Image (cartoon, rainbow, N blue to C red; front, side, top):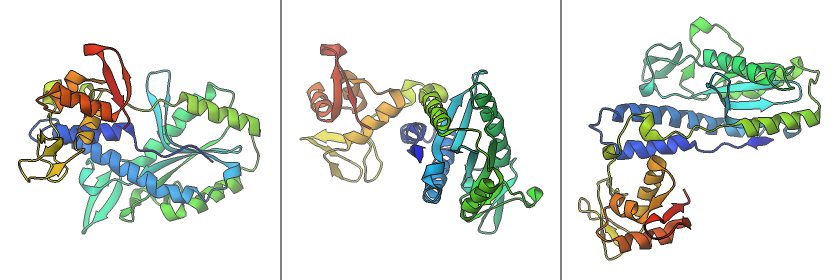
Length: 316
């Protein structure tokens, strides 16, 4: 049933690392935090929708989370949730944006402490995705499959703006199963055989290109903009000092044996998965390359190269 499972987006990990490692006074920090909040909210909404989707009969559906399909014009068709059956395809645009992160020119509303804010128009986004997916399918043998879309509001504080009226394509989370079963009653013929459905799903999996940018380029940052050192897990001060096999925070006096793990993850998300002993020594602000070597040997899942060119890769 779940052909592509829900997982935390790599880009969200990158944004979280960047928001920790770019100083709050930097002119790009607020933009990074904005996108982190937006993507985190979207991921939270997708997690809320997951239990509902488990009630869709598994024999008749294939479900994909976070598909990103390349198009000939070098753009991408990005879909939060795609449900494929033999009778139809259904795009779900998940909407769970927090009030404080919203741009000004949007038609969906959020209510919070008697305040209203305009939200992005997810209905237009879903409509665009349907057009893009139609075009993507037109280049395959499956162009006869009908495509539908719903906007799913996952926050109890969200409601549809009156300008939409009673639009049946905008549903709250508790209405999703009913809306899905209504589609099943409309589309009773099957353009796809079971074998064709499986081939289409294989093509969707193969065609998926997750968004994993080099984040410093994405926000026009330089390596020197990234704060180095081990961040204290207790008070977020940096850098911690390595003393006798432990990390010590001068600000709150907290000690930790493995605080370097999160620092190395930050390095991986910001600079790439490979790190050398010299790079680790500099990033962790260690006085000894021997200490860096010991740490890397403890956490590395892969090593390659010799001497100064030796690099390490570790599990996220």
